[in-house]
Image 1 (cartoon, rainbow, N blue to C red):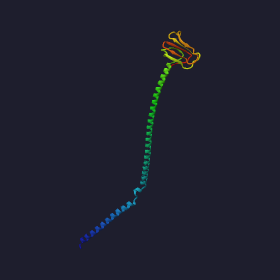
Image 2 (image 1 turned 90 degrees about the horizontal axis):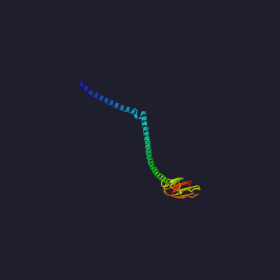
Image 3 (image 1 turned 120 degrees about the vertical axis):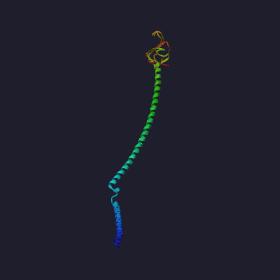
Image 4 (image 1 turned 30 degrees about the vertical axis):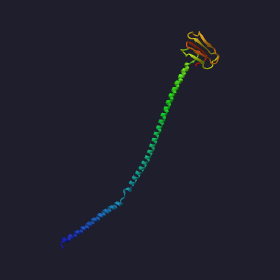
Length: 196
């Protein structure tokens, strides 16, 4: 056998050993890396990771609590708005009622004022009055019982009291008189007279 045969036969053996050595190195490296990966600490088990996870859970709990408080406050705001709308409606109704009452009061005041003016126009007090000018013609009666010093007189207008048509010192009771235009009426210490 020649040297080249020997060398040639040796080469395949060396190649096989090299291949086995390379394969063994790959297996060792891969297996060692796997074992090393398993042997190192999982980051999910680190203190920093656990602290961050606890902070995240607390933040989620706080968020849920704040959402609950927000919903509660929104409910209170909605209830307050509803109550405010009801109060506004009630206030508007009250204002309308007050306005109506004020209008009715104005009507009554106007009616009372009219009656008072009419009563005033139809009431005679002490003094001398021209019928048809100062007072209306018609029948008048003493408003209350007169005393013994009461004196009244119906006079012809323009005579300065010299032309007495009728007069009296009633001395009490509720005297009455009938007056026509063109006459004067004089009342002394008789109180007031009201048109009938």
